[in-house]
Amino acid sequence: MPIYKVTLNKFYGGVADDIISANASEYANAVGLDDLMQIGRLSPYRSYTARISGAFNIRRIVMGSDSTVYALGTVASGSTSSTTVFTKEFTAGINNASWTESISGNGAAAQSSKAFTEHGVDGIRKYLYMWDANGAIDRYLMHDSLFEDGWQNPSGANANNAGPIFAHSNGTIYFAYGNNVAGWDGTTFTVVAIDIPPGFQIMDLTEWNSYLIIAAAWGQSITSSIDPTKSRTFFWDTVNPSTYQFAKLIPEGIVYACQNIGGELVAITLQGGGTLSQDGRMSAYVYDGAQFNLKKKLVAREANNVASFAYRGQHIGVKNNQLYFIAQLGNDQGIWRFGKNNGVYCLKRDRSMGNTTASEGWEPISSNSAIDFIGDYLCATSDLSTTFCTINSNTYSSFGFYETPVFGSGKQYETKDLLSVAIVTRGLPASSSVLVRYRTDGNTSWTDIGTHSSGVFSEFADELPKGWNLIQFRLETTGNAEITELTALYESRLNRRL
Image 1 (cartoon, rainbow, N blue to C red):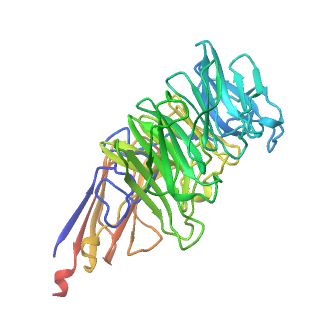
Image 2: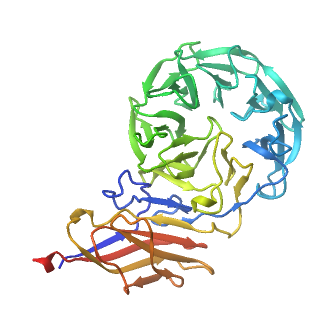
Image 3: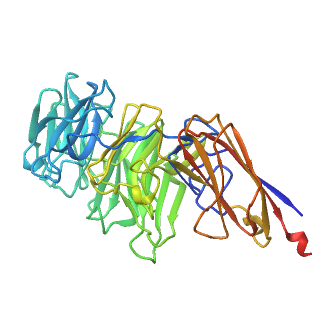
């Protein structure tokens, strides 16, 4: 009777395209566990603070070069009468104390949530730039309580087509609206520094090999009626006025994010949702100098098959050569991550919007959701005006989970019995544990096997499932339980029938 052994100690492959045929480094799902910083280890993330008080409707958070944290929001819950710039000192940590109101713009600035970017003038005066609800550009002089409402009014810009703002290494800050990009070099404001073909909406801006990269989707609405087969990136050298050098097709999906990650140009696209006849899809592409190549694709094959992003420009954060973004794919929403992990491209849902991995505990995401890194602190805002930030303490998420691929698929016709399951961790701190669970043959509910709560190794061999064809395991952590290996032994009954 054949005996099979499964050993999992490589966790860096991200979510598998197909959990039936996944390789040993991929998995079905995982949230709240860091597979990036320590190779061969799943380490729990630190908890978020529940809220930072003193502000509502926070739509953007940035760290200024003056070591002050700035945010856009309102002073009253649900108020849209004015957008306020809030500040807080970073010396005690982002998660301490409350926001302090710095200055308020007028009613036209109520929706200035689409971009919030710093740019210097003469290397001395530092401004934060943002779009307002009238399609004008406002700016805020840092630490001087000067808010210039309607600083620039590009012709053709409006609340619907105002897009990302990006400070290039050439000293110019660029403002995307519709299919146009305006520029400000500290002396001259150019209403149309570059334009791309009519019909495109600019979704993201970044820099790669000195080019200004303009990522755009085809369509007149940023939320609907966009053709998922016509996303492009336009490469402009910023020297030749109003003429981009070349454009490249992104093969599938609506591009929502395009960033330079460790020298690689990365694009994230979403497609589908809304009807049962179409699966929601999330794809990650990398540019090789000639074309964009698909590296990972995830498909939401479930009743809730939506695929949606937070708003352009505010949903993206970059840290440690990884791209973080807020999105929803099927039933999975929260903070996602794409990048290279141990030389392997990894796309995964990294964390939920709160201190729980249960769907009923998530904060909802919408066009108001935003993400950024303030030093080593991850900050995210939800649709309920909650500002989450990771904390600098030994307090960890209520629990994280890791779901393995499905095993036994190579010989599905064989009936099998599970003989043993073993879990290996680093030494467990107090109040830390790993719950081992399983499910078989397409069942949706999980059954407990046992809990590893002391030492570095536990093996379970009693009352294990028998008579199954396919099996999947789930590990749930509490506290700072760092997982290094899962091993399972199972036996085939094939010879018993011969």
